[in-house]
Image (tube, rainbow, N blue to C red; front, side, top):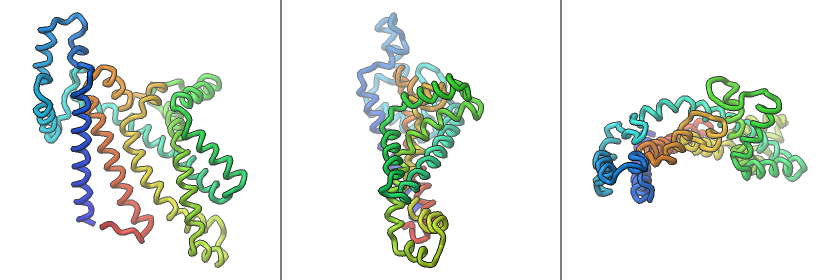
Length: 306
């Protein structure tokens, strides 16, 4: 177990190093000039060059990346060009909102997706199965802004059950979390259906049925723990996606998360914030996958980590 954990941590560090290098390189060759954003349109050429020199953007790529990596290893994610604030502070200020939305979204998509997948597997080939799979296809294909605006119009504008946007109460969380839950439930339902069908064909399931166990006990006690393993891996990926922020959903609902911060930084070419959000997202994906692998043996003791 310890050897496995050490190996995974080393792999994670290399992945994060690769992500930082690729992202930094892409931002380096980007045609947009962050210095122009800072200086303004009326700035003279001398002013622009002075700002470029102060920020160290006149140095070669290797020097800039080496300087950034050195600071990162010391816990310094840089300073925002435009907001004049440490990137780590900006991200930490948005983290509670992002974590809250992530938790709500994962709960929604698991409840919807697993319920649909299990029902479709139990009634495979019937009208229920076809209807649920068609629904999952629609949810997977639906654009985020369409679902967001539709829920806002129905439940906030027409019915008035929830606020139109903002952050601070449970009522503010419901619609954005439900939007992400609906959009993600399609993937979970399709994977759960496929996995559940394979498990229901296994010999030990037939044996459990032959012993006279009830259908609910066979499904919940014997089939579900084995069928849910692929879903756990998907949750690990979703953690990283949500930690990176869902830009469209956060923009529609005015949710002050990391995604909104990233979108503002992209519009202004604020490179330190873009780098910081990207690395936080990559770190969340790595940690999410690691946690999923560590949890799997507790669900299925046959799995060993080596």
